[in-house]
Image 1 (cartoon, rainbow, N blue to C red):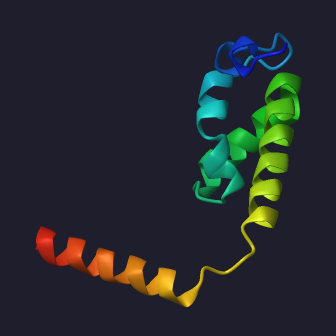
Image 2: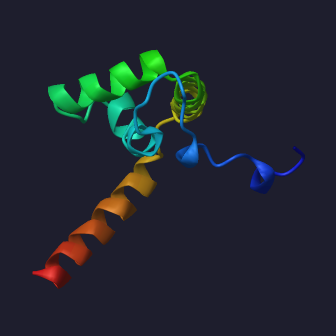
Length: 97
């Protein structure tokens, strides 16, 4: 695989040993990683990952991606940039009201 477009579509993966819906688990994976799911939904995803090797591999990749992004985003924005963003958000808020 030399191109990301050639990567398999894991949303259609189904594991013969788990019997669960992989597409549903993968759709909720980022919410699961960010602890944004309620307890029942989180348990459903957790159970699926425990039973499905393909989805667990996707989970592992997503954990690595989040770790790399977090590590790369440690630098604080300069004060002038933060002020400019704050001003723009204020303008947008006033415009929308």
